[in-house]
Length: 129
Image (cartoon, rainbow, N blue to C red; front, side, top):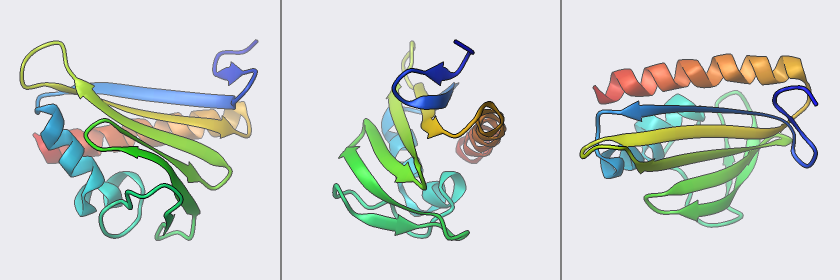
């Protein structure tokens, strides 16, 4: 089976980075208006209720699947699913930020999303540093 292809979730991609910020600060940024605009392209803070809808500036629609404050959020993004998670890093005052997207249509879409999430990670790191 090719790298990135799963039996259950189709094509998927994950990107993570350790940031020099405490987990709570990363979480507050990523779920607040600035962070949501950066990684999701939507206005306002992220909805927190399961089933709550959202719409991005480019017209992509989705809904919140799960929201665990300070930990992770899963949401639909068109036909795919995105999970954003924040966990404590290996040393004090650091956090690991992870973006994971599954149910992608092809290897090509997987590569497009890898490029996208790496760029998002660069933007988030620049904003938080």
